[in-house]
Amino acid sequence: MNLETELLDGVSVITPVARRLDASVAAAFRQGVSEEIARTTGGLIIDFSRVDFIDSSCLGTLIALFKQMNGKGEMALCSLNGNIMNMFKLTRMDRVFVLCADRAAALARLKG
Image 1 (cartoon, rainbow, N blue to C red):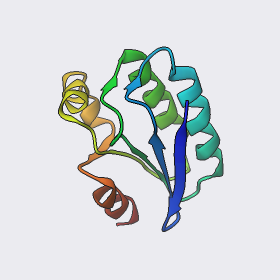
Image 2: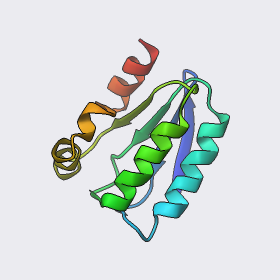
Image 3: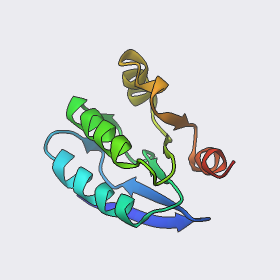
Image 4: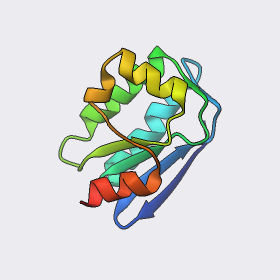
């Protein structure tokens, strides 16, 4: 699983380079993001701009990563397409996660 990582104003930003985040990549996705969480102190943004689909295993992975952020700042998800956003709404995970339209909005939310 290829993840692009960068640091913006002290916030870690991860962009999965995959069209689908499903059971076949969930473990690698979790490991890669977990490693970044261990390094971060200013929060985390996961940018879904390159992702077209996530399944329930990836949603479960995101929940585990959210719990892992304890004490490391907030975690925001951004650039979710309509189908992914609908999944978050149907599962009511939009009440758990900070969901932002784009990277700039996510950065403003975490820095605000």
